[in-house]
Amino acid sequence: MVTLLPAWMALAAALVPLLGAAGCALPATRDLARRLVPFAALPALAAAVLVPDGTASIGWLFTGVTVGFDATGRTFLALSAVVWTAAALYALAHPVERPAWFLGWFSLAMAGNLGLCCVIDPVGFYTFFAMMALSTYALVSHIAPKGRDAGRAYMAFTVVGEAFLVCGLFVVGATAIGVGPGPLLGPVGIALLLAAFGIKIGALGLHGWMPISYAAAPAAAAAALAGSMSKAGVLGLLRFLPGGEAEGVAFGTVVMAFGVAAAFYGAVVGIMQTVPKVVLAYSSISQLGLITIAIGAGLAEPVAWLLAVTAASVYAVHHGLAKAALFIGEDVAARASRRWPAVVALALPALALAGAPLTSGSVAKIVLKEVTGLAPAAWYGALDTLLPLAAVGTTLLMARFLYLLAFRKDALSGDEPVAAPRPLAVGSWTLLLAAVAGTVWLWPSVDVGYAVERSLTAHYVWAGTWPVALGIALAAGAWALGGVARRFAGAVPPADVYAPLLSRADLVIAERDRRIEATPAASSVPAEARPGRISSLLDRVRVVEEGLLAWATAISAVGALAVLLLLLAILG
Image (cartoon, rainbow, N blue to C red; front, side, top):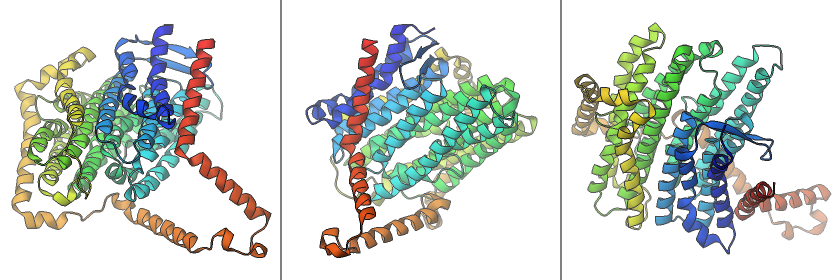
């Protein structure tokens, strides 16, 4: 059992960022709260390190929340704390327009992300997951006008995902307590959960929001979104899928197939992009597809589930740190008068994603290979060939990203002159680079020491070297044949198959806005021609709605709730 003090440490992981959000909304505390946001994730990091494994019930929170710590939750909590701290430091160093607005919602999303890592019951997980997902809309849509379009797409996918998630958790819960006609509830619940969390990780077919959202979000938000929040979907899959049970076997092959398809689709479409952040988004689609392969293998072979959980956790940490470093490094390079030092430094996380020897990626790929070795026989041989080819694709993506940073001035972050990187910003980026470099040497303490040892043998050094070398050679060839390569650049728009649908939605919204602007104001319409009570009531509803949507009101309400919960706990 988790004792009282560790349970409170776990609860502080979410409460401290919530209080920070409330502080950003209040004029008297706004400046102080902004400066303290980078420290908001430190209680979560302390909990990940200090709280022992176990569970504890907190009956007064929501309808009752079960705090739980195990190796999986601890891993994701530590990752999230590091990424959010680095992202907050960068946001403090280079504040965006309306910094209090941004950091208020930033803190709310942080609270949800850290909180869901500390709970194991469906109600608590969904509450924190929804807090994180819905708050992120304000981060994605922060920079106008491109942010508003990206925010609409993000919110459309998020609302659908939330609907799938709440239905899936209800169905799984009903199955667990024996409500319903029988085992049919199990497959339905699994399918709903796969769809819900698949949207968050950008699974193939559910990825339309990811490229444009990553491109529109400020650097700090993009780093948190790609490095930590997308991993919440991975944690949800590990927490609630019936791994190790016969019920999930039928889904294993399908999940693996989607993972393989995403790994290659993300690479092929990503190398055609012309914006660095969009390239990184498609890299996330590809890399999260590899995590999906591990989860699918664990579902297909119940005996492999525990190893699949380890592989997904290790890969999530590796990818989360590297991707956060890449997103922040992209903005650092965009601001620097001399970009080459930043581009050279970005080669470290880029090589890690490709799985080069002596990087965290080489260890993650070895653990992934251990899981796929237990996959059904028909998959084992195929994955033995496909996974190295996926590494070639990742190398091409990273080469494309670095090329755009180094040579394509029009593809850098923003079109207007920006401030040079400040020391605090470089420091936050250095923190992430150090985490990327040092993680591989920390993993022996988390039961994957064997993978670190194997990664240093001649066989695995070669296995990690040739896909990277081949990818670099292909990238150099494409560079030499510049005319041929440029023919494919921009051939596929961001959001690819969803682009026509999103463009059509934007046209409809633009036409609606045009009609509203062309409508005479109510005060200019003669009284006898004005609508009656129904329209008057609608006007009042609209005024109330606008008040509820005001950011200060929303953040203050959540902050007040956090303070109330804290007082109830103390008095109780």
